[in-house]
Image 1 (cartoon, rainbow, N blue to C red):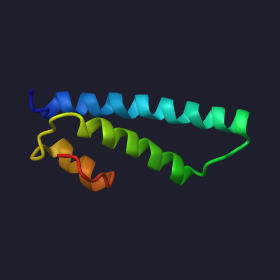
Image 2: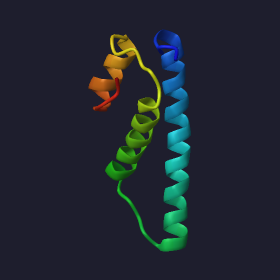
Image 3: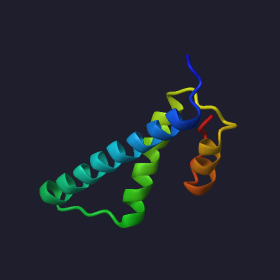
Image 4: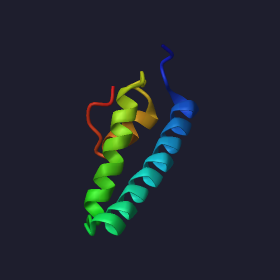
Length: 81
């Protein structure tokens, strides 16, 4: 397996963020329309982070990468190695 780092890692993360955002917002829309339930902003953002975290755990990420360090500290993700 290739170790993800640098621009490729950044590109992957941006794609994951976008896809996770679309998925969670769509799920929230359906929940509001069909179940009458609403989530607050913190819950939605937490769900997006959870999806990104799970997807990154499936991959071999270089933990010494600057992108990794920013992701870990700024987004408060845990367990991404």
